[in-house]
Amino acid sequence: MKKGKKYIEAAKLVEKTKLYDVSEAVDLVQKTSTAKFDATVEAHIRLGVDSRHADQQVRGTVVLPHGTGRTMRVLVIAKGEKAAEAEAAGADFVGAEDMISKIQNESWFDFDVMIATPDVMALIGRIGRLLGPKGLMPNPKAGTVTTDIAKAVSDVKAGKIEYRLDRTNIIHVPMGKVSFGTEKLAENFATLIGAVIKAKPAAAKGTYLKSITLASTMGPGVKVNPLRVND
Image 1: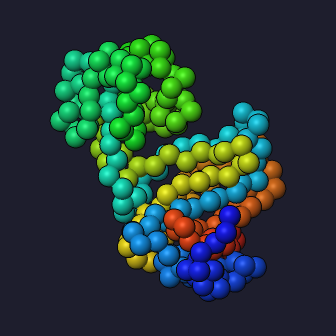
Image 2: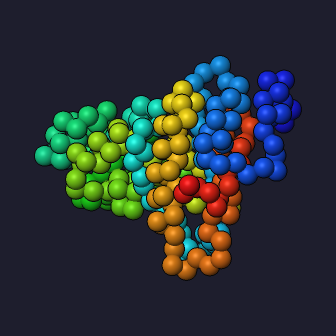
């Protein structure tokens, strides 16, 4: 893909072979953001594991101290008291069979996260093939299948994100907006990388943090020194 003039100029500020300290990298990501909007800053973390093996999976959730800068739309599938809890906690949409039918019949996906109680998972199973490819299927490991609906909704609204390996053993996650500034972005990164390190599988051998790249939407990648992330 041909790069625009702004991207080419911004990329000149980044030394391709240099591994930057976190604060330097975050500064550069902000300086090289070429978008006309408040761009998202993403972290791309390559791990020394093999995601094909069940005992080397890396997946979890973390609440970023400053959130992601994005307003998350939450759909809760629950009944009775739990549905009332969801509404009180600030869920954007709450329902059961009615919401399942809306997704199934109208291809409605105007939400970012689906949270459900364990007793309705059989209902959700009907649309699993629709939710799965979009990454919207509730999962106990992600904290989106739970009886503590109020906490789950509050966590998502506060900036909870899920991280998981893709097929190439890389985690791709948002860690804030360019407008956050260096300090807040660095704090979000520290919280994220701390969670990823804590999630290291016992079966992982050799170097765990292979490479880390930060980038803004439409901006060039900036490589972080994986050996200095705790400095």
